[in-house]
Length: 625
Image (cartoon, rainbow, N blue to C red; front, side, top):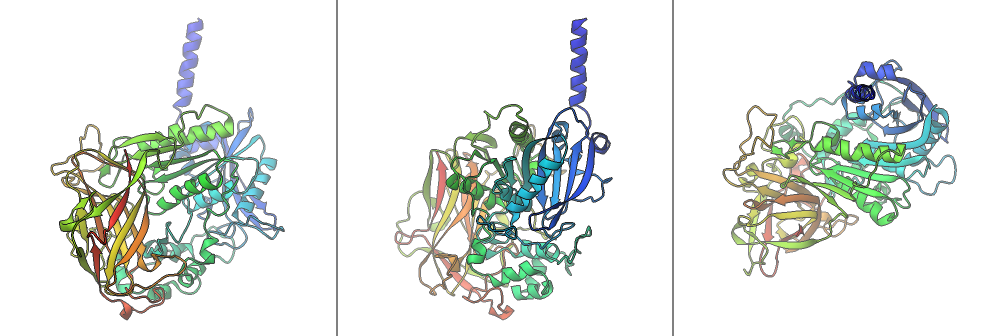
């Protein structure tokens, strides 16, 4: 009899764990309430709370603050994300979900400000920032929502990742765990709208033509989308021309676009908008998450983790980087990106073994995080997770690899004299970021085949011999170029590429495919990491400098961190070019105001990359032995 009872109880538990979480289940087990929470300066923020009907225990909060709306509005309308994402697991655990429209967006009062600067020295109730808004909202929630256990977790992806960082800086004692995911961190050097000072035109114009439209009062109605006269983005951006022409299309009402145009250099205005400012004495446990192939905020994840490590060494600070596009850890299974496959469901691994246990431990006191490494990093190429005690990992050695004659990359410096490879950079025919004709910037370009670029005369290519052993990179790649240009300015794009062997095919028993016809991977040139540098900022982002025409000059800059193994039998390739269109705007290749110049100001430039004994161009690789 006892066996039967235990067996039946086991079946009941199995059924409970296997229950289908859908809209009907959520409405049966959760209530939705909408509130306006008053901030310290009197501004009211619209907040949606989904709370369990179960009153037998106290529940923790999971909060997301967003500029993208906590829709659907109305207490009878529930968010599909609750049951369509892995958030369904948090529903089973009885979390209270909170979504809040940030100040000045959608149904919240007040004035919106992009990446509102953090103010660590508030003196009155009028001194507000996103950290204080989070503090005030959390304080209200723990005092007014019934059956909560006083523990709050905050997470969000992209812009909500920025607001998550601000939550960690708020200092509210109820905030126990925070996970900034692909967090917007720094918009001049690496995230979204600038990379090393180069303006990321495609994303900026597409985003702000909609997002930046003024909102005179709280509303549930979103902005109208901007209509292009052609869906071929290469053609469209080329024909619109200079950036000032995009400003005419944008109009005068979109404030942050005007700010972008009027702050061309890394001035105090930009410095105040770096989310790393103030990352001292961070109290909550931190889990920063990002994608190795995130086209938007790859920089932010690496650099936010690094900033907390340096400025707040006592913080329980972890980082997770997987083979994902922007937000890919919560969408799809993470087994592939574009044509490249990773051999396992990496997103499900992260959700089930890292994120959910992280919040359960700190907010519910459930389970253990003993196995959660300081750095949980997926290494593409070898297609395996590594649990590391530090990032960059111990044993990583920055090692220069040299450009040589005849397109060779070698760990030995060239003995040649006055040796260089040159190309003509023509702004009227910029190098595209992909070989495809597209209606928008893709997320897959981060792993795209680069053979199309290798065949262009304005892209120079260097590669190693066939590798006799695996080569693993784990950390920041640094380009150290010795160049001479015939004009007074130019951009430099450096791409790190994994060249697959001839005859390569995926083992379909291990690497599943969702495609009817697989791409030809024979000799595939996989983009592992690419980055652009606006040459005028080579010595200082604050004080740009013109080039002396035809004078050998050093251009040295960082590429976002890499975690990749070049397998035995592959080759390492480096490509160098001076445009990457329309990801980045075209440099007129003259030392003039790029944001206000004319179409007629764009000129050709001859670019020479030197690789001789005196002027040795190198790529400094973070090699993990």
